[in-house]
Image 1 (cartoon, rainbow, N blue to C red):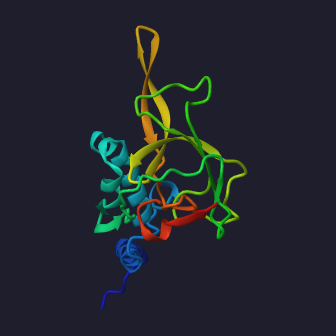
Image 2 (cartoon, rainbow, N blue to C red):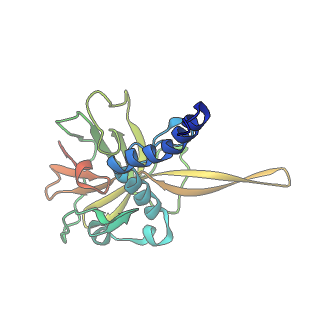
Length: 218
């Protein structure tokens, strides 16, 4: 019988390597898959948040009312209709208390609302913000006291009706033409959706799936 050579063993090992990788991915449900440079591919929750941000920025997403947002469901990859906003819908259009600090007691995250005209020097926008919101939190479901930033991030606030609000930034890209820079402004949505409970003593912030929901109280 012909004995296997060293080269044959190496070649067989190389053929088995892709199979071993596929088995590992199957066992892990696709989580932790690595791409260029060893960076992991996003899991379903990360993909859901990205899709929610993209949806809010579309022409259709810009026109959604609070009631429509509250009932919105969407799927990502192999998870059809898994994710959704799932917020209450009432006829009351509650507004957060201006200047009050809403705090999530589990993480220490805070939200502070300011209504009225934008601060002097701020670029006006076509969305029509009702004011701004100072958000000291961590997006997604990873928020913890250890992960909170040192300072708050201030964004503009859009009222959607039915006590629902969406934070966003007014940003721009530029177009170079004949050596001139022409900025093109647009709303870049934060991804979080806020519902204010009747009485405005508390609110909920969600990023489109249950584990991301956080209750904030004043």
